[in-house]
Image (tube, rainbow, N blue to C red; front, side):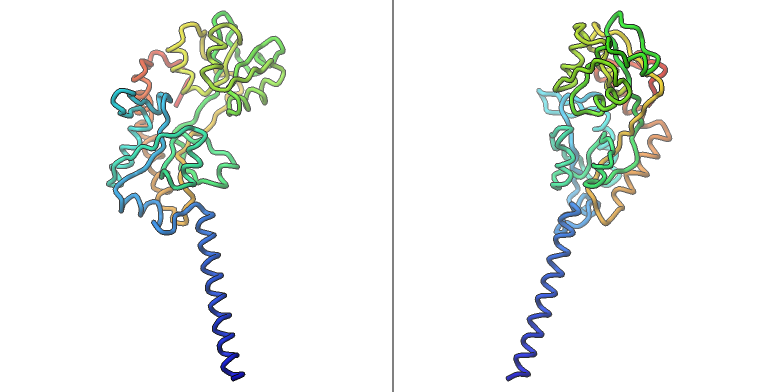
Amino acid sequence: MNRRNALTSTALAGAAVLATTASSQGLAQSASGVASASGSTLERVRKSGVLRIAAIVGQAPYFNKDLLTGKWTGACMDMANDIGAKLGAKVGVVETTWGNQILDLQADKIDLAFAVNPTPERALVIDFASPILMHSFTAVTRKGFPKPATWEDLSKPTVRIAVDLGSTHELIARRYAPKANIVGFKNRDEAVLAVATGRADCNVVLAILALPMLKKNPALGEIAIPRPRLTLPSNLGVRIDPDRRFRDFLSVWTDYNRSIGQTREWLLKGLAEINVTVADIPAEVQF
């Protein structure tokens, strides 16, 4: 009886260890953002034949949605279609917001997010492929306001800078023009309106976003890229995955298309959809 009890106890202990190990592995997979049941992202996309991407309404030249037909266009849609074709998959659009697309990646609602600015905090929860482009931070002025050559020209108590709260635009304005009167608005449209109506002298914003602003708002002045020139990469965001093939494929894809000028063509096409032509782009604005 003692020997039987000993064998039973040993078997139960072994089963407990195996259960604990399996549970720990499952938790680790869940924490990494990988859906263990569906395998890696690359395997899921190929098996399902669908590449799920995040798309955001009213964010030209990246995304444009025809509210009558529901059709999506824009530079990032062209990019997504090219990626999907190379993977043998059609593109499935998940409508979201800039703030929610990171959460959508973690929740396995999407496979790919476009135009994500990498930060150390974000790198803890998602992964990044190579940059699509490098942004320059600009100052879009009101009419009659002197074009700033440096950030010091803006860092004065008499200068009113409009920014969208919580954005990288606000971060840059506060860091490089700390003496300015910085006025925060809940979104970019409100910040632009403040400049157009003379309630602010300029709006700090990334160049690719400044171009449509100037085209749509004739009350605005001009675009300036103050020195020192500050840039921010815009990357593809993906879910953290032990199988790095999807991320590595996207990095090769972005590097290749950027090097042959295809990325610029997609962006110019997206800008053309909102009537921004090459002639409207100042020489100092590069992407």
